Amino acid sequence: MTPTPVLGVLLTLAAVALATIAGWLVVALAGGVIRRISGLHATTRAAFLAQARLMPLTLVLVIVPAQMMGFARFEAGGPESAGPLLIGLAMLGAALLIDALANGVRSWRRTQQIVGAWRQSATPITLPAWARRAWTIRRRFPVVAVVGIVRPQLFVARQVTAGCTPRELAAIAAHEAAHVDARDNLLRFLFRLTPGASIAAAIADPIERAWTVAAEEAADARARAKDGGVELASALTKVARMAADATPEILPVSAFIGGDDLEHRVRRLLESPARSRGFHWGWINFSCAVAIAIALQSTAVLHKLHDAFELLVRR
Image (cartoon, rainbow, N blue to C red; front, side, top):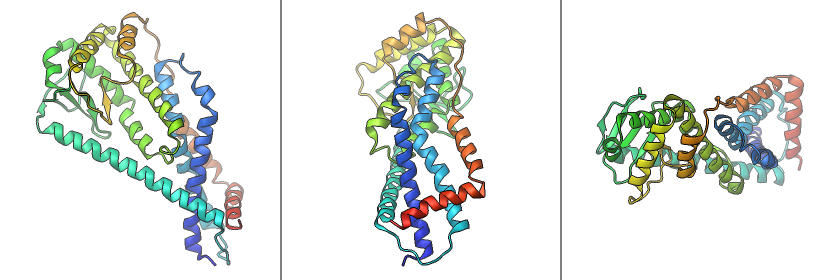
């Protein structure tokens, strides 16, 4: 016989596994829709792709607390034994949680190491269109990157500040401010915390790459709205030339050079007509999660969910 607390832990871990599997199945089944959104405005496309990439995490955050609530309210505490199916799912859930947390910790530590190295040569600077902390740093690669989620700060290599005009620097700052407004660094961190991303890399990685392209295009569009795109296109070209002979730095943060093909970005900035800002779908997952959470407050629904998980105990 399995003690009730142990049974509760096993069921919770099994809920993690089932919610993760369900999330990635939804994303896989929606692949056809995801591949057809290339014509949408960049802001809409980036938000849609982010929601798809975060669907497994959203389901985990909704289903697991609901399962725990149902277990606490309706578990009779009688003699029950954990079957092989429950134990197997619980082991999978534990592995998924450990992997997701490890990915999050590695991403955080990598960011801290980068910031630590940059701060050794950092000097405060003031940039137009940037109201937060900004630093100029000594790096061979022409770094332009926003670091941080709660208190984002901008790091710019000294050759960039020396080689760009004030208007070009303002365009760069406006581009990076757009990343901050869109909370792109937070999304990147949540991508790392999504269970199953390593196992489902064939599904997750293309979506994340497409999101990176869309996020850069959306940031370009917001910056273009302020100066018409000419200054930003000029800044992109200058920074790309500086980067040609330098070893690239792989950054787990919002970076100026990255995402879409550079030539395509410059051409779009100079040639594309101004378009109205797309609808931001950033609250879709949150809204769905709230709706499901409200539905689960029904005693009948919660009881059925508990009964469904109890089937695992008997297998």
